[in-house]
Image 1 (tube, rainbow, N blue to C red):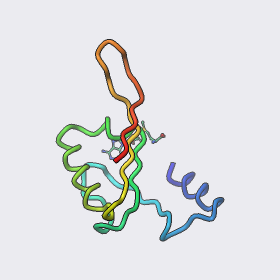
Image 2 (cartoon, rainbow, N blue to C red):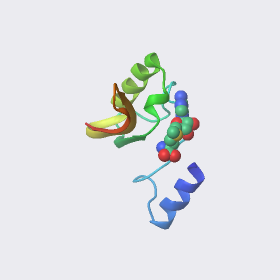
Image 3 (cartoon, rainbow, N blue to C red):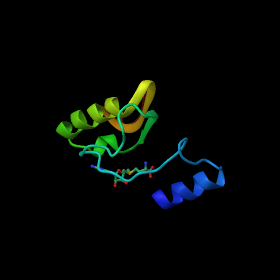
Image 4 (tube, rainbow, N blue to C red):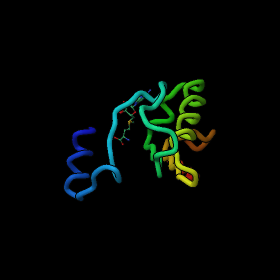
Length: 91
Ligand SMILES: C[S@@+](CC[C@H](N)C(=O)[O-])C[C@H]1O[C@@H](n2cnc3c(N)ncnc32)[C@H](O)[C@@H]1O
C-alpha cells in the first residue's frame, strides 16, 4: 500500500518536504516531530483502534499538527436503526 502511495506521489511530482510517507502503529508514539504536519487524513482506520488507543492517537495527532493544521476523518459509524454509514468529520 505504501509503495503504491509513493509511486502515485512520484507520478504527481509530490516529494518531501511537501509529501512524505511513514509506516507506523496508531497505538504507539507517531515517528513525527511535533507541530510539523499540515494535515492528518484518516480513511477507515480510527474505528479499528480500541477506545483507550483512540485517546492516545488523538493526543498524538494534536502533537504533530501545526497550529491551524487540519484533521480529516472519513470512517464508518453505526446509527441505531440505520445501519452503517460513512461519516466525515473535519476539524
Ligand atoms: C479498512 S483499512 C483502510 C486502509 C486505507 N485507508 C484504504 O482505504 O485502503 C484499515 C487500515 O488500518 C490499519 N490499521 C488498523 N489498526 C492499526 C493500528 N493500530 N496501527 C496501524 N495501522 C492500523 C490496517 O492495517 C488497515 O490497513
